[in-house]
Image 1 (tube, rainbow, N blue to C red):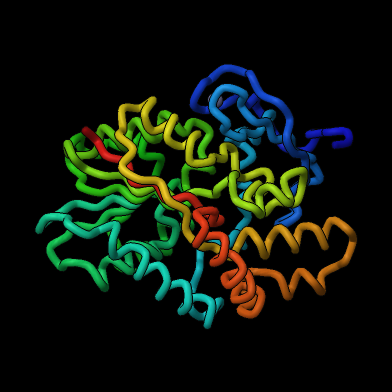
Image 2: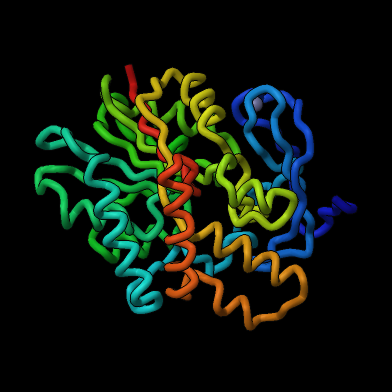
Amino acid sequence: MGAVHTGGLPTEPGTCGTCEVPDGEPVAAGPDLEYGTSGDEWLAWRCRRCGTIYLDPRPAPAAFPVIYPDRYHAFEFSEDEFGLVHRARTWLEARRLAPVVDGLPTGARILDVGCGDGFHLAILARHGSPTWRLEGVDVDARAVAAARRRGLEVHHGAIEDLDLPARAYHLVLCIQTIEHVPEPAELLGVIAERLVPGGRVHVVTDNTASPDARWFRRRHWGGYHFPRHLHLYDAGALGTLARRVGLRVRRVRTILSPVNWVYSLRNLLVDAGAGERPARHLSLRAPLALAAGTVWDAAFTAAGRGALLAAELERP
Ligand SMILES: [Zn+2]
């Protein structure tokens, strides 16, 4: 696994966000091969108690402006810049959200935590009931500004710090957010308090039990996204976290995503010194690589081993 140094960025100790005790074994080490935001190597551990994978040490909040540079893809996933990939993803996500919002009442309140530029809220505004009240939350000012430019109602800050009403929301979306936060149990607990009884949380996150995670697990798995993913889960570990904060697990399934396959291959090539050429063909701007990854991951998703986990949790 090699020597691990973290001399460049401010760090803090990390631990399993569910068990909150240091009882892990090292599973992976790697640098930021996607954005190259520092030369540091990061070490990922698997909690022996619940199976959560976590970084220790991890970037301190003071390092976030460095590890989320302006070019970070979540901030501006615009149609201009991503073209065909954007249209394909919009179509796929609209199909995917339909069962998630199924059965919501007239006038339902929906909150997207970590809404980024408002991609999912914009889909609901277009395809959902006009009676729904749609709101987003994001910690990043650039993301909030992009979402507001779309006319969306977005709260700037961490949900833990915002004064949002308790027992108010019928559905909270938490899509590829929980892996980024230092305290996932606190985040999910605050979300649970904001739900009406019977309200649901839809959590999507990378699946550490997927074949891509297994094959590239020592260093190059795209899901590590070093050093931005502080906690990663399989279905069992995510269920343990949900129950810890008093949520009921209605269903956990896996869903299709080509992204980690594409990034795992890209990380492998970049790390081997292959240069920028393969990187250009293996990115979120590369429709052919994403299409190939989609077909490939579809086979595993059909077997219940897709690249992402999608959990439906409920406040009793
Ligand atoms: Zn644990």
